[in-house]
Image (cartoon, rainbow over all chains, first blue to last red; front, side, top):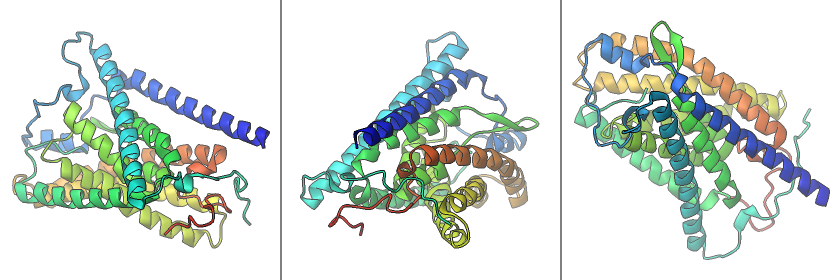
Length: 125
Length: 230
């Protein structure tokens, strides 16, 4: 059981590390994204339509105001965006599950408990 | 295909806000009772990955770019309604902090990229997967239906975007002039979507199949006695 648990833990850590590495790589690569318009922006440009840009957003078009270097500005805003997204999703998850548990009137961890790895990748015929 | 402000008229963006708000309420209600607390870190990592991946526009055709969407990825890993909420979080942050997509158009963007590309495509995917599962292994039927429906999710989301523009009284263009370039380009972007989504899910399925909501396995998601899902 100990060995199973530790293998499970190792795999989970490896997955989480890989995910973080990929996300950081994407953040680092963000200044090299294609600058071409996307399909909708292209229609807007080609047909001479006008859209209004929001000026209220703090980091419009993924550029931090006050950072001169374009690449640094994009990378920093990408990093901030990733952090805010991570925290917002985790916060929402915590809030929603807490409310659900209060509604059910139980303090137990619910279906989270007792999930084993016995199933594994099922080798079906 | 984040719609900026100024392209949709009030009836269009207002209706879209209503539908998206309804879907968000329903998703919160569903997730409240079904989300496993141990899945919360996965919720965060999936949202962060989708945000980061959406930053990287890749060239699609001459002078046009596109990026990953991720709605089907979120739904397959976390379930349709938790996946929908992840997309809502990503789209809201892109809109509010980075002005990516207009504020009035946020409802329409949620409708297209979170609801149509998420739960709507997920339920078609789930039906196809269980049909295929009669002949093929669950793994094969999951990954092959996922490849197709993640492609379709991008195409349908772009079609919904084109539909909103054409029913809006502001854009005076023929439907063909709107649908053609938008849906056409997204048929190509969908291929990238399918490749990325299928590879990521295949890797997670190999390492930790219990982290893939759509994969039922044999007793993989068995709940303790008395905790049967309702």
